[in-house]
Length: 269
Image 1 (cartoon, rainbow, N blue to C red):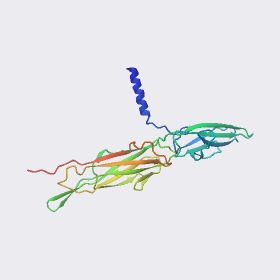
Image 2: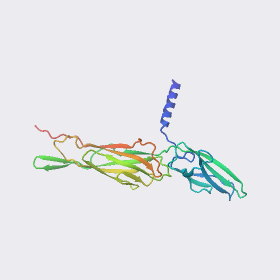
Image 3: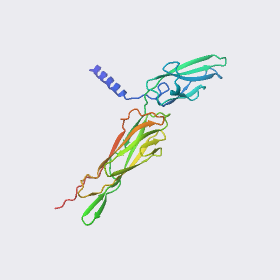
Image 4: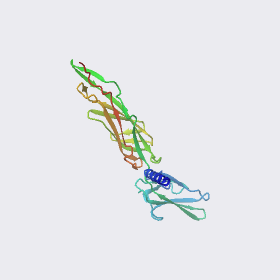
């Protein structure tokens, strides 16, 4: 029985780990990431030459790996957002001293899947309208009800967005019933063109929708006619370096239910 429990625990842990993406590092960089590579100089006055090969020790990596400073003891290398996950590259450093003697070291590098994805969450799963019902009289016998607006807040949180990506974008939409309209406002780090939200840093984005119920109700309307659900959806998340989020189904939809008490019409004898 104990062996069975251990086996089940191992299987469960393996299943959970299958969704864990590796953090981008110098030896396992994600597409679009930038990492620093360095050596300790043998002597002052030595010169250096960095290079990167792909698949073997002789094929130049070209634009797959952009070296910021190829003749320093330390340099940044930016891995293109178009590199293929699983491919092997080799970072070379050639150091030469004043006598013309040289030495070479090579670091194997394998491209890993991006660990970047976005989470969307509603601040409140349920809430009321912003203000009380506005009751109006039309003629002597017709009562109408206007429920006005509801302010609905969401947040978008980037998870494991590499510091070298420096910003991200995503598409945003809010689904509301017929007769309702909505307009969003954003935290200072984000802007919206009507479809796509552009974020200038790696921070959380706060989104506030003012949803207007443009319908008018009367005593013949259903008691719950004013209730509605507003569903926000984000999609096409991409880092500033062009790297797509790795799990487009991850917490990319959330909703808020807006309601009042379902009071019936007044009954009398």
